[in-house]
Length: 254
Ligand SMILES: *[C@@H]1O[C@H](CO)[C@@H](O)[C@H](O)[C@H]1NC(C)=O
Image (tube, rainbow, N blue to C red; front, side):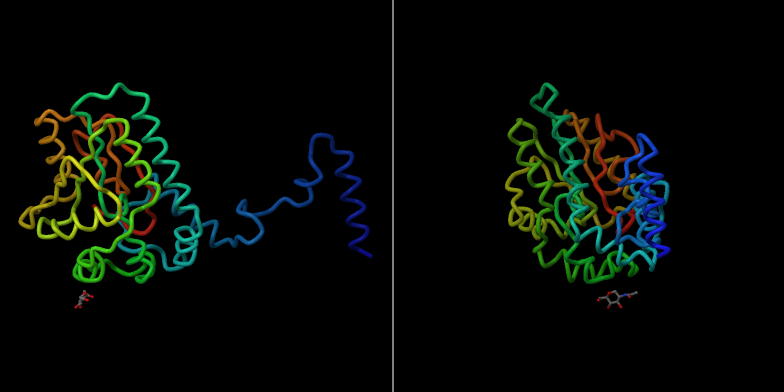
């Protein structure tokens, strides 16, 4: 009985309320993320946005209560959609420019051109502390990483525009052969340069990548776009004409 009174009252109010749609008026949802979303999902989406915007940084592990939300984000399609959106912007930017002989697009590797989701899905989506020995053993050395599909599509389109591609990675030089083989296996069939880090180099990622980019500029390359999933690869000096941040809510590299 109460329900009937409520419904009638709701319909009356809604029908008198010009401009407010019946659908949105009585059914306003508290989360903004649809029926299934919990308060936790909403908080974790905020956390993820803050990470992408670099308002949250320097974390070693993701919040324990966001493991499931992160897994859903990565595996559920939103991650690929976000990746597609960024890659499309890279392409639009490059397409609208006049391309010169030494114009390059710079790509990071792990989390940018090769997916390390197969590893992170086995290690709590970033909730486990990073172990580089284990990462190399179980992931890098296997040489089996699949391409991130939206980046691979974009890579082929950029090559078609006449751009050169340079890979600049934090992987060490002893991983050169396995990295080359993995890139080819994943579909990245050509590149201008593959730059890996010397094991004796103690610079952090910002310093190391800035130094390598400065060398490229000195060699006469013009960095049109710099694409990476970590802010450290897009910061410092000689960052390129434009930087593009791919999504990665699972880890942060200084
Ligand atoms: C890191 O991984 C290696 C190889 O699996 C393991 O032997 C080592 O104990 C791990 N280190 C830590 C601190 O968990």
